[in-house]
Length: 346
Image (tube, rainbow, N blue to C red):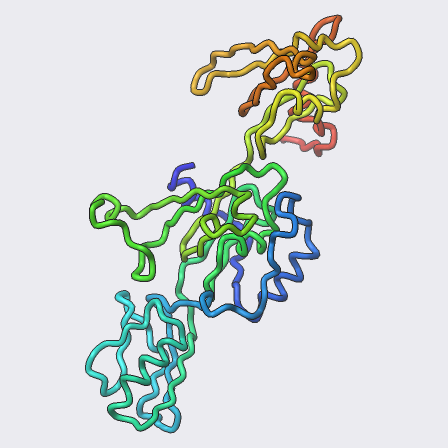
């Protein structure tokens, strides 16, 4: 999926933007628990968002944020509605140099201002509060149970963010795509100086294995950045048709062999030609198709290779009296067509 398409999706009428705050985390977690449960592959690996936030997860001040700064018993040093400059800097009375606010937490900025004020105030007591957050929202789209946008008021890792959309759907693919649409800030790791093209790039994309993220592996569970678009594409499908108990389509959420696909379809029915199973495979990028002949009995005896299926493969299980290709294919692709409402086009 192109970056332009992802940007277009962001402008559509999705769920109203949500706000992740420390105080609301427990409430959202309770609502998520009452919603439809995440798929089995997440299992118990999803941590319940906690209202207590580790120091490393605290929100980092960004450009455009509005701060209130107060010095106890020294109102002349108070500043309300201080907007952080695009360069991440602020100014304080009497302090000659600008103070870097971006990438710092409220507590870290308090320490810095306190140090700067000691030249003018004896034992200053400084408090910093963020009054307005100006960071770009983060969107979670695709094959998730509750696509949404979120305004981050603290640092959030990818796995935790997925809990707020109730996890991936049953037909989710195996890859998480994270598109960084927001500009790089001083808080982010900048591209290598040896790669000038990377420095000029406004769009970056990272890919993570969904199962690794679900296990909380650090390399697949990064902190998301303002403006990120998290996209989980639907898994490719394979189709099992013909003389099986339940012709069906199967999402390739994990590697799938032909024998397992047939078993998921209920297994071969009576009078099946088990030694003449056909895999109909379309060559990617073309309309050409080829047939792969499979001997299911030989596979069961470990005398033949159990072929791994790829997206859009059609496994045709023939009966002794002939094939039922089209009819069972329709049943596999649209098994619930009778349940759809009938609408009149005037």
